Image (cartoon, rainbow, N blue to C red; front, side, top):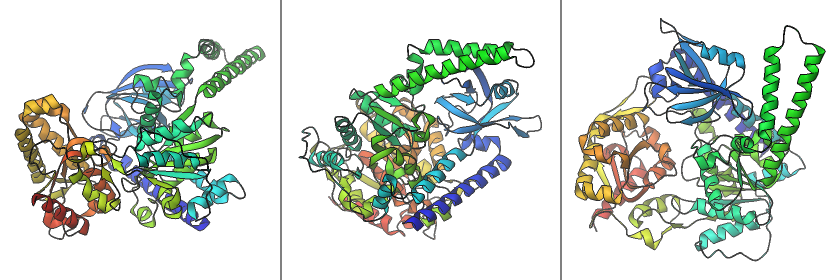
Length: 617
């Protein structure tokens, strides 16, 4: 067990080294247009206002002025660096790191480390910003693994042993609570959470109401505990569960800035609550007085100056701690990302229960950052869908992508609750992933079982394509132009069958999915150029499989891209990714791919056989 965790640390080190080398290579060799396309760079920038936020950080607003429709990967909390481009096209990087505080459309707010950094940014010509290596997250994961490896004779050691061995787990024995508004498997899952003394897992396949169940479990736990900690791997997942808790009237304190900052969620953030506190104006005035003193002082510091500053700083600290304590005392749920649980605001705080949503997408090391803060923890997710995002093949082959949730499912099966009733897909779409991934245990709710868009329509179609797929220059993505054109034609033909008026009236929405980012870009271009789709574009989403995680659409069209004589499916071997793609569809699924290539793989051979069997009825 300890050896396995030590090996995991070595694999994490490989991933870190790979990412550092890849980043260095991108810094040196990749052109600005390519960085923009990859979503890691904005250039050129227009500067907005600079100001101090409520946490007394120097921040500046940035706006991108070109490539406004390009996707990007900037999110709150991510580290960034600034650069300038000289007349010869050479890039010059500024020697400080900043952090994204807020992103919306083509506007970003960035927290800077100092006033000197602000001066550099404001005086720069042809300024750009790009994501930089997130060494802090790796440092936190290494420290967390070291703590759990070294743990002896304490609660952390007990939880480690439970997760990685068949060590006995404890449960409470009180009578089950009835939840008439939940289905039987959801009700059982909530009760298993309440009974758990150590750990529980809520396994929620697509469309089974995992979020509904988790919110109910948190709400019911709050009848027994004063406060709980709720985490997830991504800001988006944290915001989603936090919004649902707010809908139930729960007082949520969101640590860190949400990715999707709705007005309501922004009002739950620590920063906004801090600003709204009655004592904040007094604190702001003291901070401003300190800055004014430093700005007005002459060379050297007198004793009188130092005494004034010291008194003001002491008073500011006193006020800040007073506000902080009141905000935490009022909150029933503290919500943050897994790495956000290491925030200085949470230092020394303990919780009875930790809930981790989307646990199957989080590296085990990231989970161990938050787990020491609680006496027990609950994981929710689906390890049959998307795994954690990793870049180093050696680390993946070594098993770094095996999550804590998977270890617990294997070692402690009696603490796992499977949600069995799905409310998303018609039965014909559900049955294939049900048997491939969930041992046939799922069932469709009567409200969705037989639904469809057209009479006598087949729920799943496989349309054969050929065409040649090509790689981009650095081999990072693939494109199949003939298949992309076929995909758009097939969608247009299906829309013509339904009729534009009905599509608009019923708001029938569509997802175009491809595993490859290059194909996604091409599909976007083709849809944008096609006049037929102009009135319907708001109903069409085009993204990678990863981009559709957690979403659903009435119609899903998947462009598989791969086509070759050798039957090489490459990236498509990740069957969990295909499970996500297939299970996004409510009523219609269209798969477009070269069956001669794909059916070399037994999974796609079974899928093709299943689709063909539907045509026989």
